Amino acid sequence: MYKDLNVLLAIFILIQYCICITNAGSVTVSGISSGAYMAVQFHVAFSSVVQGAGVIAGGPYYCANNDVLIATTSCMADPSLINLTELYAATDFAASTLTIDPTSNLASTKVWIYSGMKDTVVVQGVVKKLETYYQHYIDASQINTTYNIPSEHSFVTDNFGNNCSYLGPDYINNCNFNSAYNLLSFILPTEINPPSTTNSSKENFVEIDQSQFIPYGTALDAGLYDYAFAYIPPQCQQRNKGVCSVHIAYHGCLQTIPLIGDTFYVNTGYNEIADTNNLIILYPQAQANTLNPKGCFDWWGYTGADYASQLGVQMLTVKKMLDYLISEYNI
Ligand SMILES: *[C@@H]1O[C@H](CO)[C@@H](O)[C@H](O)[C@H]1NC(C)=O
Ligand SMILES: *[C@@H]1O[C@H](CO)[C@@H](O)[C@H](O)[C@H]1NC(C)=O
Ligand SMILES: *[C@@H]1O[C@H](CO)[C@@H](O)[C@H](O)[C@H]1NC(C)=O
Ligand SMILES: *[C@@H]1O[C@H](CO)[C@@H](O)[C@H](O)[C@H]1NC(C)=O
Image 1: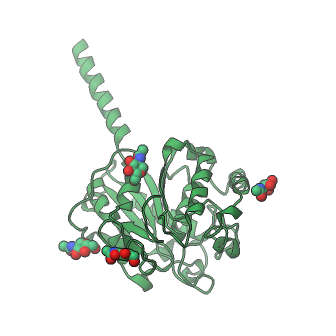
Image 2: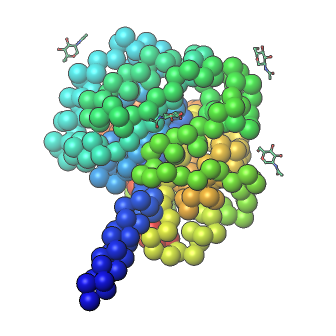
Image 3: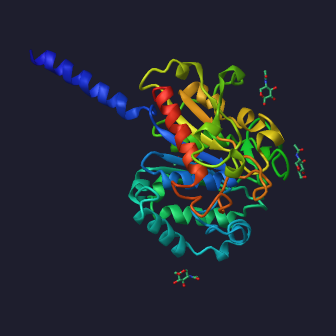
């Protein structure tokens, strides 16, 4: 009888353990440049949902203060002008008005931060301000930084793209460093498997009608493309509960579909990790418009003053797409 109880207890502990060590059901986010600023916004605004953020060449939350001039000066080139005291106050104020989730959630999340040594577009000092910003809310042990790779402004891979020190389209550089793998290893709740060594199958992409999730106005006004893509490996297509998790990857300026086609969502290395780790990768898509000629995600206010909160049109759209994936794929 005691023996049976012990067996039952062992099974119970095992089940608990399995629940504790899985990545299933987690939601994480990452991005490059304007997509990095967007990833930070999404993490901070929806911190009750997002467990981790990978930030490549981006700065602190609300850095631009709804002003394109501040965006292009302080928040890209001159970090000495970034006043973090004011950004903590802006963040805390947004939380107090319930337009973002309570900042206390951030304490249990993880952040991976990258800035290339040769980045001349969003200089390292700006990204280091982001590190300090996050340290205000998150224990330093949950923040990992990489500042020693000699890359120009780009999404860095270990197998695709331009010369590491090159600045230009498609803003993906090969520096023998797999950013997608490194960031996901750090921010996912538990250890991950190495990426698949065979290229991911294009058949696993699902085109999502992004425009149907836009809560108001046109896709063009929202700076969003009519559709987005999700990479859904076969084991997640089964829709079995407790198996898969979702990661959102935001492209940068000048990386939209009209400009670079499928290059970002095929070649940045995320999908090969999705294959071996039961991950769905959601690739939201921006679109250029008059106020946003380079097709950036909104981190300075071209869609309205609430761009960085849960009320921002792009934030709402991506949150609705995320909710759709969670429900449709039984995450
Ligand atoms: C930063 O902003 C705070 C609050 O507005 C202000 O008291 C402080 O002097 C500012 N710091 C700098 C270095 O400008
Ligand atoms: C990359 O660019 C640097 C600087 O222009 C050059 O020295 C180096 O040889 C290039 N590397 C490759 C692999 O082309
Ligand atoms: C931090 O990130 C680097 C690069 O991704 C990695 O090599 C290192 O192991 C990480 N450190 C920790 C404590 O996870
Ligand atoms: C796999 O992807 C890499 C990088 O995009 C490419 O260079 C290579 O040709 C691809 N290999 C195959 C077998 O398709």
